[in-house]
Image 1 (cartoon, rainbow, N blue to C red):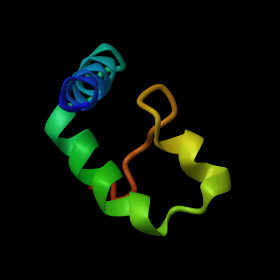
Image 2: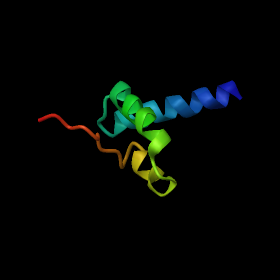
Image 3: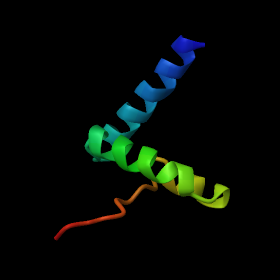
Image 4: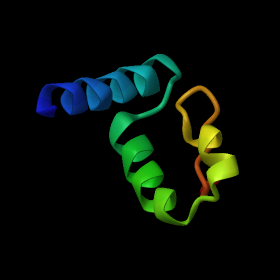
Length: 57
């Protein structure tokens, strides 16, 4: 089971890279938002749909 979990995390990291996101920033934001995210909006946390919540310009 640990191998499957590691593969899932590595897949998310690589997907974040391929979508132009910094993996640490992506994972930190997603793991922070996940507990309060409504189930209907979980898909928005996938790397190809994700947008940072707090964008500093």
